[in-house]
Length: 282
Image (cartoon, rainbow, N blue to C red; front, side, top):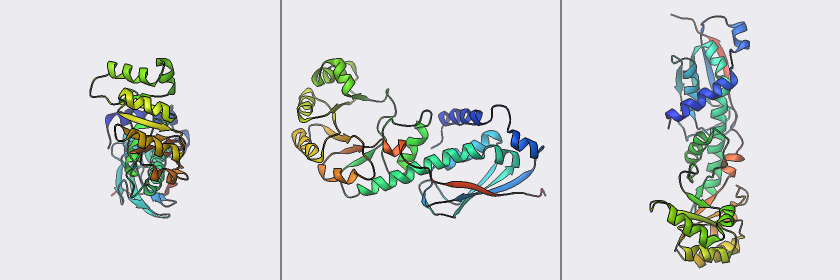
């Protein structure tokens, strides 16, 4: 999953944490000393972001070595020893917090996503994320959603057309917004439009929208909207969807359900680097 875009972002994160030096580490370890440390899981969940975790240390020292005992997407348990790191003790100490921040955040999202996706099992509805991501963390957080069993909606504003309430207001109505988008965009772009009631839904269908998002509708309203659309467009529901209320959507018949909570409300998975000790060079 690792790519060059991630490298630049990780370097910026390290720069945020080390503006000139790690004064704590440099005050007690004044020169190279080889050591090892263990990556320990402190609660049950799904691990995600191991390559990002490793690359954080590799940026500081390419000779840092890793022995992983699990892979992204695997379940981990409280107290489990999931990796051993070997390298310059100064690097292990200086890279610790930034590397763990990535790993804990990504693992938390994967864990939460898996829990939500499990609630949709057996239905036709697929789980999507949104653009409600942490600034400069989108590429990591959307990857974590996929590892957790969810699906990615558009990555950014250049990816696809989504006409929301303010776009509709600016255009003068649902029909006007959809027709303007279809006139402007290449035929390869689908046009999605957000609707809040059945009248807007009817207008979106008649205008030829490819995807209709049912925003903050009740289950009864969503069922009626799906019936009205009748397969003439894909359907997506959205609006404060969480682990606690997603069961209400299962029987509505929508193709997709999007949840910002996957990325903006998932708690971290608690992980820690423990048992750091020097290693005698042979």
